[in-house]
Image (cartoon, rainbow, N blue to C red; front, side, top):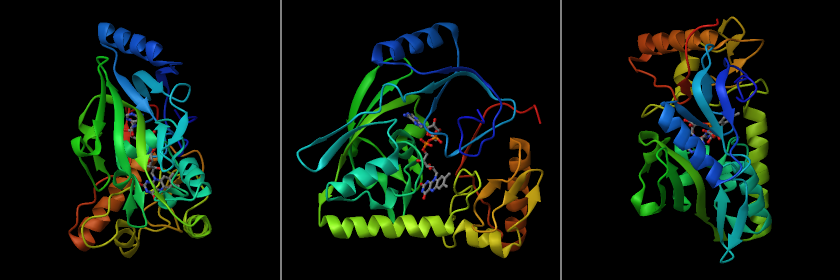
Length: 283
Ligand SMILES: Cc1cc2nc3c(=O)[nH]c(=O)nc-3n(C[C@H](O)[C@H](O)[C@H](O)COP(=O)(O)OP(=O)(O)OC[C@H]3O[C@@H](n4cnc5c(N)ncnc54)[C@H](O)[C@@H]3O)c2cc1C
């Protein structure tokens, strides 16, 4: 899985499957159900820490079947779950549609963004979504409107369901193309300046109420701290980077040290934002 995650960490998956269409996907779901094989849906792996023992069961990648995008009614997009979120943002800006500017520089797919309710600069994907199509692990296809879904800070209903997000309809706002482009470029530059260049999975911990996790981590003296090949980024306290051949074990150890230091200094319990999955071992 180190080849399929932005952190470049993770042991092997038993199966990595790329269904080509909905019929093939249904077939995989049926086989998994019949043989009791666990399923994991992979987006672009930018919010994941896969443990060193890898993933038992089937990892599904929708890149070959959910990558199309249609613009309709001049201001809405029907977009496949595997499409890169920031590509959608640039495409919208190019068409003079506002709303997705915040996605510039957020790596990952639309499906992953809906699952995580990704956001930045005070905006999040849940504000733009109008409709989401899913198929559950038993093969039931469902289209739900925004009103039928729940979202909060880095949380969505999907996190409590066994579903595969297939596509979403996003509603944007027509605006001045030059101004939208200016904002997109300003956000890109801001991100390039703030985000480390080494492999990472973005913010490791959720922001607790009150103070950003990055601030608490920095004030607890963790910036630059290292374990094996993993290091707390010197640029951004809430990023752990893979400096050199880090293992998931290295990252998990660093996470525990950070949590302890923040607990000791601020009596605050940090919770992971990244999804830690897979089996121990192999370290
Ligand atoms: C440099 C960097 C900067 C980042 N900045 C931000 C930021 O500003 N804001 C922010 O919110 N996040 C940020 N992230 C985190 C990450 O990019 C987002 O959470 C992103 O939305 C994850 O998408 P993904 O496709 O990579 O999902 P993955 O990491 O592949 O998966 C994340 C979760 O979503 C589920 N999932 C993915 N696709 C589907 C699907 N089609 N159906 C059902 N479940 C699915 C997976 O099973 C998994 O549980 C950053 C990451 C990096 C590396």
